[in-house]
Image (cartoon, rainbow, N blue to C red):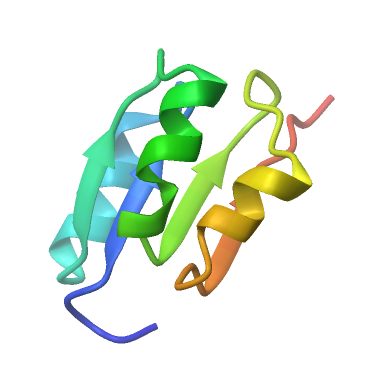
Length: 78
């Protein structure tokens, strides 16, 4: 992942994740309460989108994020 990329975090995550990403030169937008409609509007502005269980990404949302290079989905450990 190159520097100057922007990351959208769409769910509640450990604050350390945001800190680590920013320390590595990434521009992070943290919106844990974002709606699916808002994600669809904004996704084209990001190269990386981080989601967890609350956020359901769908095919049409991914199509709007053509420049998105990575979609990381965290899984809860049981």
